[in-house]
Image 1 (cartoon, rainbow, N blue to C red):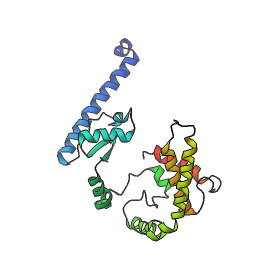
Image 2 (cartoon, rainbow, N blue to C red; image 1 turned 30 degrees about the vertical axis):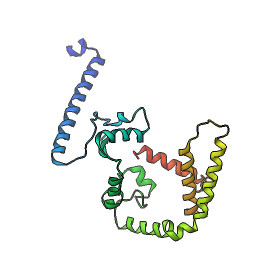
Image 3 (tube, rainbow, N blue to C red; image 1 turned 45 degrees about the horizontal axis):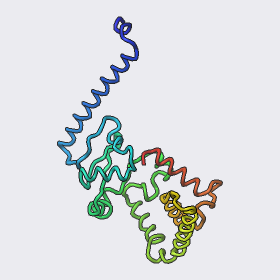
Image 4 (cartoon, rainbow, N blue to C red; image 1 turned 180 degrees about the horizontal axis):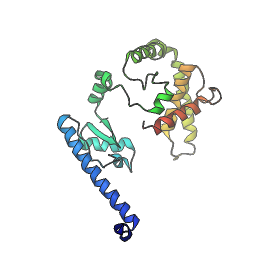
Length: 229
């Protein structure tokens, strides 16, 4: 009891937090060294406890920060997003290996409660794990939406939306020397094309039991972003 009366409470809290930080760091380094000895992992930048490599994304766009790291550590590197490891690929050859040649290994995504709710227990294509269901869904997607015959049918939709985007861009550039968010325009155009091709309706106006497709998609993106995607 005398120790607690001599030292202020904030000092004891700081001391305990420091001890926990040192213990966590030591444990993390020890576990990583044991794992690295048994698993051949790609090179990775030095990371911090708890946050991993997140601090290396500060100050610049994420794609530029990762590109700078890839120039230092190679085209395949391991990036620690908090407690979750991510594989960063910056080489066309390695990207082809992962996205095409070894697609059956890398096509699955991490599970999360938000994704499970939005996709009705992973019954979609983008987030479903590799399975017979996913293979059949991909066949339907290619034959009904992405095949050459269907592409010709929906070509008018694509041309119309691109013309609309160009007109919108021209309006935003008046007066000149004004910054324009091209990312926003491109994403809106893609959403519009997908909505018209898939559902035959306008992305911004088509209601879904009240709210528009735009509101529904934006809310879904916020949920996925909050779950770590």
